[in-house]
Structures are given as C-alpha cells and as structure tokens.
Image 1: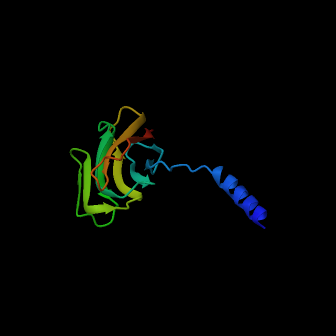
Image 2: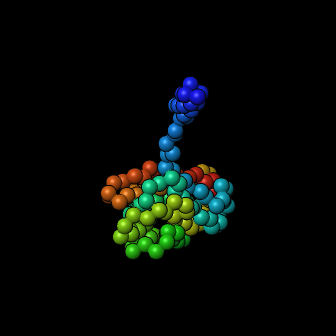
Image 3: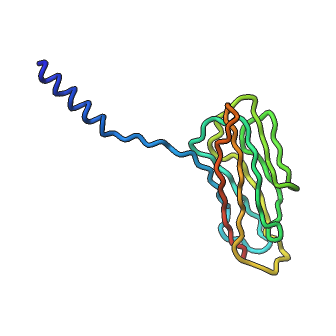
Length: 151
C-alpha cells in the first residue's frame, strides 16, 4: 500500500512539475471605428485596457495630425472617478480615484473628423501616450497607436 501511495505521489509531483505558468502581459489597445474614412467622415478611437492591475490615476496625451483630423470630443468611460477631464486644445485627458480601481475594458473614447478641406489623402496615425498610476504611484503604462487611412 505504501509503495502504491508513494508511486502515485511521484506521478503527481512529476505531472505538476511540467506545468508552465505564463505571466499575462497587460495591454493597451486602440481601436478605430473605421479603418478607412472619407474626407468629412466622423469616427471614434476607443482605448481599452486588459490585464492591468488596479489603477489610481491616468493621463493620456494624444498626438494627432491636426491638419488632417479635427478633434470633436473625448470622454472617459471609467465609472465615477473623483476627477476627470478632457482638454481638446492640448489633447490631454486625466482622471483620478481616491484609491486604485479595476478599470480593465474600454476606458476612453476620442471622436475625430477627417477635415473636409483636405488637399492630401492617405494614411495618418493617432498616437496614444498614456500614463497609468497604480496604488503605489508607479507608472505601469505602455505607448500605443492606431493608423487610419483618409480617402
């Protein structure tokens, strides 16, 4: 009986020692509602987080070619922050909580319009430079961007 139990324990130990655990990398994803937009079209860019630790505060700087795209509006999609703001002049957005919150999912929506007086068409990009602060006030963000084509 002891030999059978010892054999089962050895098999169980061997089986569990081959299991590899992969750490999930947090991601910031930018998604444009349209990949190709025509002159004069309005579209949105949504910023989403996945697998992030709880976040206490965030700031985003948007880099947009304003000779091609006009910023219409921006809105935070997070629930009930103590402070939130979007400044269309400086293309910045900020929010803060009193303590870190799980905000994974869609967090911000930027509405843009391809200018109607364009003499140029082609690819343009929207770069997102986020700063996400955890409970210990450490920046845990990565930069991301999305490309869209104006036709």
